[in-house]
Picture 1 (cartoon, rainbow, N blue to C red):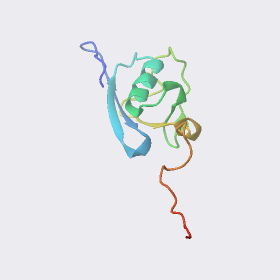
Picture 2: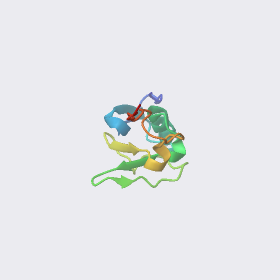
Picture 3: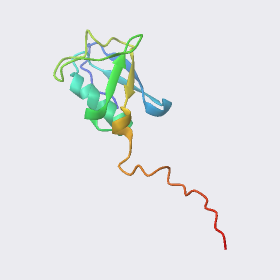
Picture 4: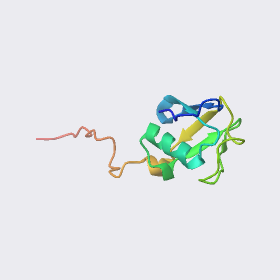
Length: 108
């Protein structure tokens, strides 16, 4: 997904590294609010936006912006953002195992 950018305005190209090893590229205006970036990352992962952790830099550090703060200044053009879903949030409600049945020894 791409956000429209006004003509003549610079854009930030961001690469999202998503759970499972996939990636996504976003092109956003520097004035984009952090909450919108989180929403786009949630769309890319299929996870709830409140469950996401977004890190950047090396070593990766948590992005700590207010929801209504613009991403410019903290997130730079061509940054790679590591998007993760903490394990408690990633587990399905039915946690009885992989769904495969264990073979049983039956004596007759």
